[in-house]
Amino acid sequence: MEKTNAPVIAGRAGDRLAKGLQTIIEKYDLPFVAYNQGSIVHLETSGVMLLDLRNPFRLLKELKPRKHMMEEMGAAYTSQGLITLAGSRMYTSMADTDEVIDDALNKFETVLAACA
Image (cartoon, helix red, strand yellow):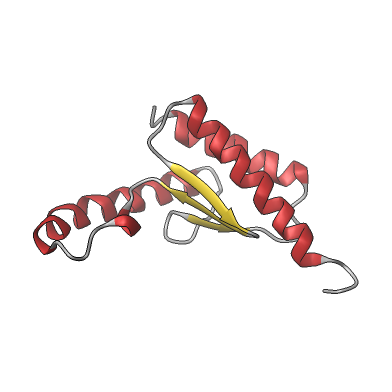
């Protein structure tokens, strides 16, 4: 890893992917959030990770539809050849060139444009 500088390169790919997703979200005025922590990129569409566990009644009401949305988004990404973890996370590596990220962003835009 020291010779290849893999973590830094993967982090740059994560930055590029997150910034591209943010641009798409803004373009279509979607109520979604994209951010990254280095090479781990999050695309939150259902807000399931933001549910308030202190309010059990609201939690029970909102959990199933939000989980279903995550599953639907994951399926939509898969239809474009994009594989995510739980429909909301992606991992980049040093193998993810600008061309790979651009291709992924085009596929994400296909899916996200349909949400607009």
